[in-house]
Image 1 (spheres, rainbow, N blue to C red):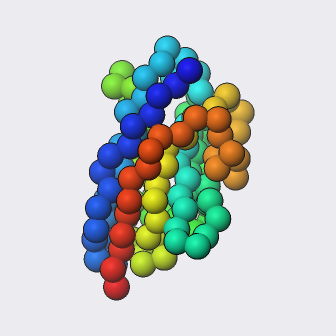
Image 2 (tube, rainbow, N blue to C red; image 1 turned 180 degrees about the vertical axis):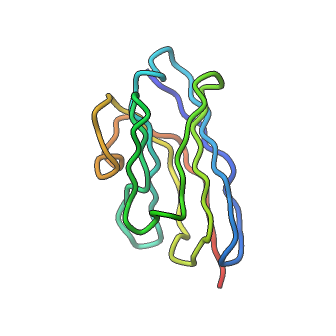
Length: 123
């Protein structure tokens, strides 16, 4: 069982940056694949980034080169550094977790996720 709590969302202007954090609890955290997905108004869930238990990462094409996923195992915390934000990045962002061996495309279907944090980017 994994419990996830996101923080760090907010409102920024286009070109700005935000860092999202996800505090995880549960003794299996370190062996899970962790990721972020988002859901904008009227849109389907979209996998944004994933980091597997071995540290390998994968990203959606729409965020490559702008977003970076990382985790601190000592703090049981997952991060998403978002730079060069665009209005189309506006969405609710969710932290998610599941068994290892997945990539970013699978993140929206992960078995555990948090309550989400809102990111709004204005032009």
